Length: 314
Image (cartoon, rainbow, N blue to C red; front, side, top):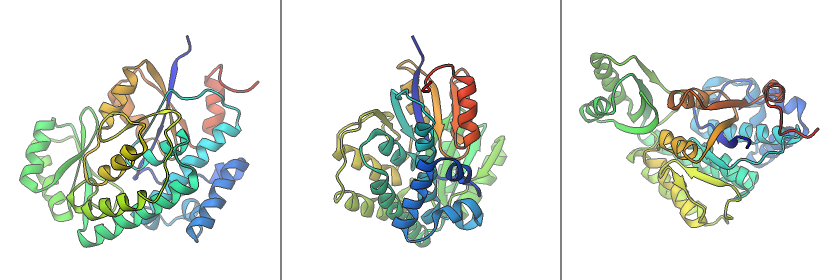
């Protein structure tokens, strides 16, 4: 029996200047995704992805639409290359859930892009009212990180993999948390490339606005099972999916539990589809035996063809 497969999609923080450029240049379906995004957004997202500057690309209102666009461009490139095996499961890290919904047939790319543009804008506007940051703490236990967040006024928000918890809060509180983490002997304290205190109460207004927007949009039942971050479980009812998407903006996410759920159902191959290799690193910490293939460039797809003896049209 061939190994079961899951597609996983990155979230905010995966962006880098140059992402998606070779997809645009080598795959007509990827080019169409970028051109469609430019038309819908009213500015050139491909220019921002390909040329930067990184400061602008990392701003919430731009990074979210950029990562979604590159992720779907990569998905289309994989299809154009003749890969035929359907995934058994889908998952996306926070923002990446919108890519999962497109891959599942629940919504089309254009609908996802319009929603994500609003999501990014609402979160950006909330960040201006309550300037914040997120940071990854490595090498401390959950109890130790909890003590840090309680003492610093921050929040544990992303439970990504063993030994890594992401915290979120106001900038001055993140600075205090860094001092406390250093005192406790944390291996690393990494301030993330995001521009707000996401997954906290500071995003309450953004969550409400997004939920209102989603009521105007029709979602179909996904054709592939999606495991959602906030429950680490499958959901296929459109109204509940919408609630999950709004809820995760101002509540914690459970990536490790989501991957363990998928793995527990016999999946041991994962395609990380989109920019960067953030998820690959997380999955290796969750279980070093999981096989993760990156799909973010033409070379990645060429390498996939070399390493997998099946799945592509002959």
